[in-house]
Amino acid sequence: MLVWAVLFINLALVTYTIGVWAERRSRELAWGHFAFFCLGLVFDTVGTAFMKLLADGAPLNLHGITGLAALILMFLHTAWAGFVLWKKQDSQRKQFHKFSLFVWILWLIPYSIGVALSFLNG
Image (cartoon, rainbow, N blue to C red; front, side, top):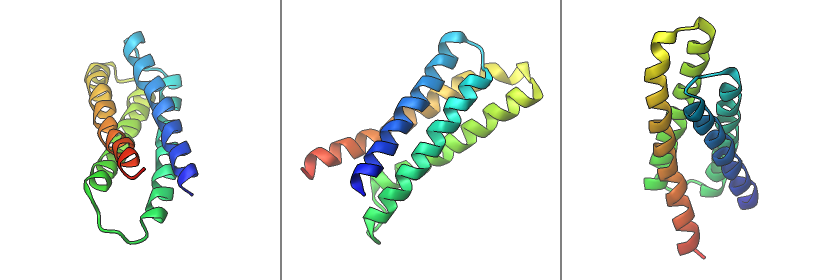
């Protein structure tokens, strides 16, 4: 089960990173970026579900708390992207652009903690 958790979390990293940086480089939010945000969110949710099964009732730790916060932010980020694109609200695109990078950086915190823990636990 650990293999599946790692696979899906890494797929989330790749797809979410593509979406965020493609949107940043183009300076224009597009439906293709939204698709990558959605894939990243789905992969992260599935990977997190596998990790939850592996935790087997263990108390919530720093990795779990930051991971849950990052997942919630990813959801809000993706929902906002869809809303901005659907409503064609150009006034919110600049704010979204900043928020996008912020969420991605915050998402890297639990990812990095997970990588560090995997090295420490051998």
